[in-house]
Length: 142
Length: 334
Image 1 (cartoon, chains in turn purple, yellow):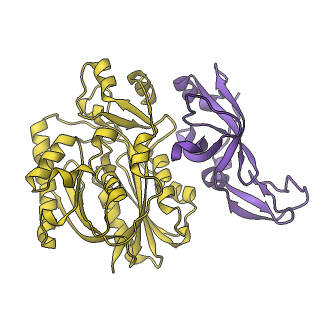
Image 2 (cartoon, chains in turn purple, yellow):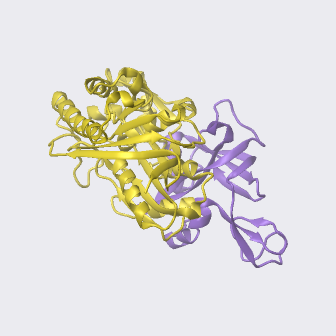
Image 3 (spheres, chains in turn orange, blue):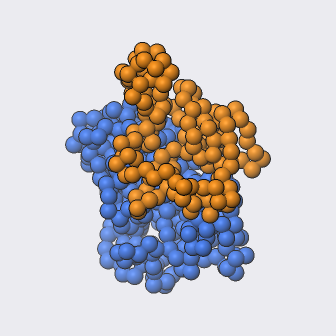
C-alpha cells in the first residue's frame, strides 16, 4: 500500500521538498523539518523563522528496499533497479529525514558516512512529476 | 553596458555507457565516442539543470538574480513554465524575468543571448542561464547511439570583470529533413544522408564564425580557443581546420568523446571545460548549431575571474559504467 499524496498536498510542501526549507523555533532555537505547527523539541514554541538547510548530513541508519517491498509510486524504479537503498539522514542542522540514496558505492557504505542532497524525480503520478531530494555520498562530488 | 560571465556550474550524470557496449550488443555503433553520459531513471533535464545551477550560484547572492533563462530541446513537459520549478528549487525571487528556449539544439546559445537582453530590463545585477539537454530517439535509430546528457549554468553580470562577452553573430536558413521531431513524438528522426547533414553543418557554422571574425576584425590567431557544437567529433575537428583554427585551439572544447551528443549544451559544456583551464586575457569563440538550421557564434575575452566549484575534469572522472541492457531499461525500452 502506498501513501497517496495529492497534488495540492505536494504543492504546499514545494519549498521543503525542493530546497529543504525548515523552521527554526524562536523559543528554543531548534530546527524543525518538515515544518510543524508546534515545535517538536520544546513543545511550546509556535513561532518560527524559515531557514534553508544545507542539505549536508550523515547516514544515521540505512536499509534496502527489495523484493517487491516498494510502495506503488516507486514500483517502476524498483523494477528497473531490482532494489534501491533508503537511509535516515541526520542533517548538519539536526533534523533526521528519510530519503533514497543515489549511486551507492559498490564497495559498500556505512552509518556515519557524509552525504549531500541532490535534486531528483521522486516519482510520477497522474502524469505529474514529483521532484524532491535524494542523497548521494559526499565524496562523489569532489 | 559591459556584460560578463562571473561564474558557471556543470552537471554530468554519474552513469556512463562505453561504445563497446553498443558494439557487443548491436554489432556496431554509429557514433565515434569512447563513452557517453546517461541519465539515471530519476533524472531529467530539469533535475540536471537544478544541479548545474546550484553550483553556478553558490557564492552569489541569489536575491540579486533578476532573470532566469532556461534551455533544453528535451524538457520533461511540452507545455509548462519550467522556470518555475528551477526558481523554487534554487530559492530565487518569484518576480524575476524568465524565458524558456527549446525546439532545437540552438536553444542553449539562444538562452544565453536572451539573458543578455533581460539583463537590460532588470534592476538586479545578475541573470542566470541554465542549459540542460538529453537528446532522445528510438533505440533502433542510428542517431540514438551518440545521444548523451549534461547540463551547465552561467551567471551573467552587469559591469563586472569576468568572461566578457565581446560580440555575437548568427546565421539561420532552411535545411529540411535533418534531425527533426513531430508534435507528440518523443524521439528525433533524420533522413539519414550524412554528406548532406555535414554540408549544412559546415556552411551554417562557417557562416556564423567567419561572420563574427569579420565583424570583430579579428582572425583565428587572435583566439586561444574555439568551441563548436559537436554532433560528432570528426566533423567539428575537420571544420575547425578548414576555418583556419589549429587542433590545439579546438582540443579543450571537445567533450563529445567522453559525454556524447549533449544537444543544446554541446558548445556551452565545451566552454566550461575551456574555462577550467583558460589563462587570463584569453579570447574564446564558441558556436552553437541547431538542425534545420541555425548557428550562433559568441566571442569572449577572459578579463577577470570566472568561478566554478566543480571542475569538468572531476565530473568526467566520477562515473559508473552500465551495460547496454541496463541502458535500455533506463530508457524504458524494455
